[in-house]
Length: 119
Image (cartoon, rainbow, N blue to C red; front, side, top):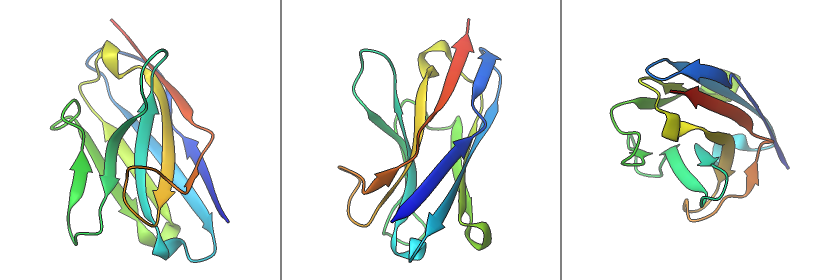
């Protein structure tokens, strides 16, 4: 079992920034990749940013490239999502997730944190 807890969501004006955090706990967390999904009302779930099995490579959705940055503190089993230049279309519930395979799905996810960007 892996437990994930997100924090850092909130309400921000367009052009502002937020940093999301996700702390992971459980056995063999090092066997998993960590990443962030988001889901807005009436829309499909979208993989926003994630680490991949290719050393040194990270994935970003086209919609967030150049604005969002994923990072991690391995000693703390924590992954971060720095979100800059936020847009109203970034409004969604953001979920931290882990996978042992590919990012077509995930093995565990957190409860989510709401990000609302006002225009």
